[in-house]
Image 1 (cartoon, each protein chain N blue to C red):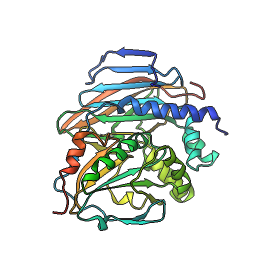
Image 2: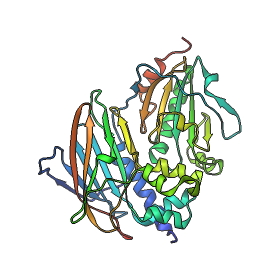
Image 3: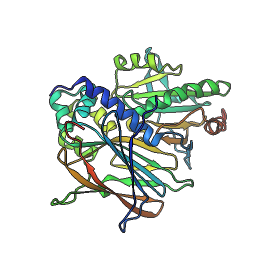
Image 4: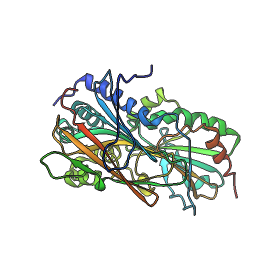
Length: 175
Length: 191
């Protein structure tokens, strides 16, 4: 059956509306993990073909975000991630946004509307997300400078919230 | 421009089940209804999705018309669930515990991601499509710390246009809880 253009517009409306039903103006939290598990290593290329390996970032705090373009809360949190990335420029914090299962042809035009300056990595076959305890998108982990997962956040956040920035900065640099 | 909901009905809870009020709203643009449950430590909302919206979503993810039709043939709700506890209580949800109750029919549970993938067979579906299906559907089992939330498509095996009650079960810490969203309606081809 052919899908009418109106269905696409309605779908967009429902998805945006549904994200706002429960998604707005909530307390911003990061869940501490104790003991901190080792972060599963990965090596992925970004949209420019540059390779990024998590292990190479030891000594820095790393925010690892799993997302997809079709996921409304993923889209909602991207601008605040970019603002947080800029605000954290004074700290030694890296940010990696791992797209799950989509191609450059989809992601590239998407980033025209959601510009970010941190690397967007491509997990084409979903093999990296499968190594992390992700159940839904978006899910974000904060990896401490020793390579252990210090915090997790299931669902979108306002990443430039002062409390979240304080927690991320609190992980410091090389220990 | 923020979207406005024009019809809001507050229904009081009236059974032995423990829960707060249920809010039902109809979106003036889409004509689709959202039922939202507020209870101690949990917020859940279910928004009707038209079959054509489901087709659009999956065809946009590379599904063929025939493949998307399989999912569109189910009853699909965009579902958002959040842990609203102020303390450290973890909210645990398993869709296998939920009950879809319909007059004259045995109770069932929502269809899980695993059931869809098992029934379909990932090789025949294609890797990209299987990834999209896995991550677009609401997870079968999930733990939510305070502030955590998730959004996904919930599928139930109820014909389009028919009504049912959805009994939701969860645990907050060690405490089991249950609530019901009554008289939900599967969207038909038109709102």
